[in-house]
Length: 66
Image (cartoon, rainbow, N blue to C red; front, side, top):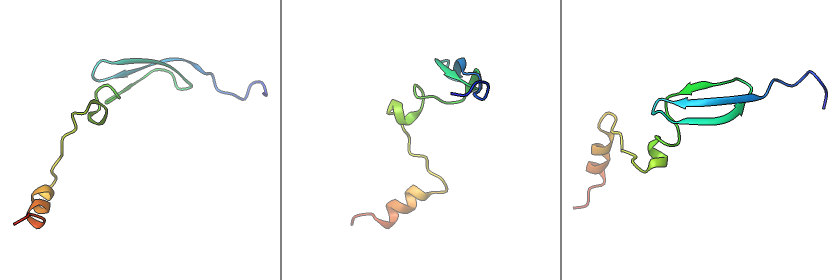
C-alpha cells in the first residue's frame, strides 16, 4: 500500500439517544445517532403500524370481508 494516501483509522464511539454506546473504528471519529439496533422497532420487535392520513382504515374498508 502507498504511504500517506489513506485516512487516519481511529477508535470511535457511537452514542445513541437511548444511551447505548457502541465501540468501533472510524475515519470520522466519534458521533451521536438518534436510533440504533438496540432501540429500533424493527430489531426489538415492537414495531407499530403508523397510520398516515387514514390509509389503514381505507384499506380495511376496501378489502373488508362481508
